[in-house]
Amino acid sequence: CSAEEEEEDKEDGHEIMTEKKSFVSTRMMTCLFIVTSFVCFSSVEIPTRLPVSIFTGILLCYGSQIEIALLSNEHLARLGNASYVLYLVHWPVITLYKYSKEVKLIDGKGVILSLLWSILIAIILHNYIELRLLTESKKSIIILVAALYVSILLVTSTELKAVINASVGDTRINYAEALHWNRRGTGPISRGDCGVDVQGAKWASPYWEEKNNRCVAPGNGTARILVLGNSFAGIVVDYLRPLLQSMAKEIRLFAHHGCRILINGTCPRFTRAWHKVVEAMKPDVTWIISREPQLATNPLEEPVGKDPTFQFARDTLSYISTHSKHVVLDYQTVGIIFDHAMFPPRRIIRRISKGNFTFDDLQVTEEDWKTFDRNETRRMDAIENSELIRHKLSEKQCTSGICYFFNPANLHAYYADNYAHPTSEQMALLRPSYVEVIEQLKKQMKI
Image (cartoon, rainbow, N blue to C red):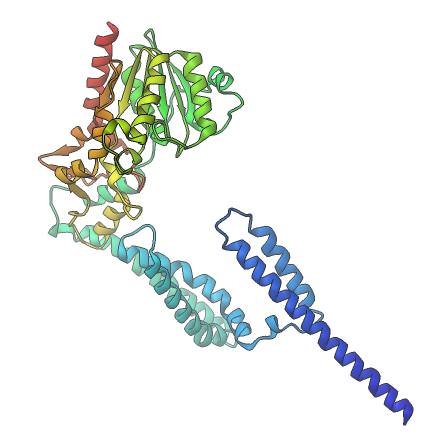
């Protein structure tokens, strides 16, 4: 009896130790899960792949040896079984939501609705299709897959039908061409002969970022021209170069995506670099082309002379003028009025695809634009600088009291995205305005 009792005691002790290990492991895994979740959703930029991969590896390793409540939980197990279907479903649901609402980014309500619909559809597909398919024959699966492909073809053909049946729209507009252009024609054009800027790189050292937004092109004239700004400068310069060719000895692009020239506190490395370039190059002309909506949206402190945004912009332009003979400043385009949901090419494509030819939300009245932009106008107009040429782009973007986000004659978008980067259609609209400024420059430089 004593031997049997000893054996039973050993078994009981082993079970207790196993339970303790399981309890400790579960607690440890739960803590790791919580910590990893905080890392993944933290506002601080932390690489998430490494901690998630390590946590998953540890979880699987322990789970194969010891029962862990986190893995054996019935509800979590069901969620895990349906998770792949949920993964497949969630993006089409989000895409359809954005398509129906004609937005690029979804708000909080959209996130909740998309999540609920994704879970519901995933449950239905998992229980009534995925599990049943596991027991079906290959023939049935092939038929189902073929049916799905046919469904996809039927859905995608609705766009073609919308174009064919576009007789209810303006018959002067080629809707098929408008669809094609807004899909394919909104990107930037080639840099052409604007090559690697070795000298500019030496001036800017040790700054090395965004080489695609730095280049130098030869000209046929005598003026040394620096185009300074952000991604807008990188796009506009390719349209501007041919217009400057006859007066320029060299046209240098020095820009950085997302940075600001006249707003304080953005991109300090780039700011230090362009200061070096301006001082070393001493351009005949510095042309500032930069999307800086804060000039309009920052609250204006009265009087204007004491406004911090005005003071920084004034001092920056004064600094550039000290090292440049002439300065041209592109004012903000009407596109800065966009919110993040605005995406003109996509909105035009979706409207045509649905047979909806109403585009009233793709325009703004000139009065509303001037109200929105009044702070920029007051700030920039208050700057006293005899070397500064003010290029007010919006004066060419608004006609008969309306500022369009697209060309009403052919439905080509003027803006390529929700950041209002210009398309070739807008640059064609603004070409006369740029020519006027260049002629003004030539007169001042006596070329």
